[in-house]
Length: 200
Image 1 (spheres, one colour):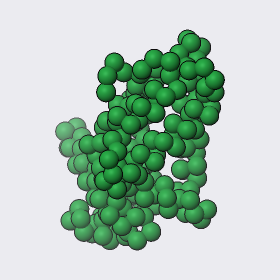
Image 2 (tube, rainbow, N blue to C red):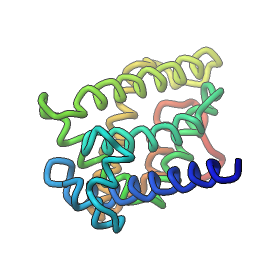
Image 3 (cartoon, helix red, strand yellow):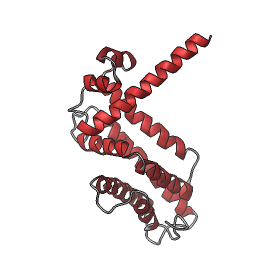
């Protein structure tokens, strides 16, 4: 019984090592210019070894990297509504501030995926729609409690919030005077009748 559990743990650890390497390589080169062989070299195994864990090759690696990021983010938002949901988004930004490589990878891939033929175009289209819908619901819940500024329409506020947060991430990566936590709070506060947090 101890053997299989040990093998399973080793397999899980190796998958995480491969995903960490994929993040590093994709962040540096983008998806198109990256290769499974380069990822394998970073891990210190063969290309065959990588494909043993990710049989779909480079696209399977990319999807796994994106899914790992989303699972962590969306898991932290489970059960949150209204202002608490918006606070949860701020906390996600706080986590991302300490993981520049992930933010860089996501930004590069989001830009590449504007190409209709890019393999993760459907992923990003669905992801942006899912986030916009979730933020819209949060603003609707805040409005139901009388917490939105007069004239604010939840859907338009959600789209504007998403655009501002995505843009702030890009400016932050370019080392402009942008903070992906504080500026996210300021964006939300622009639509709320009371500040989201007591202080920045």
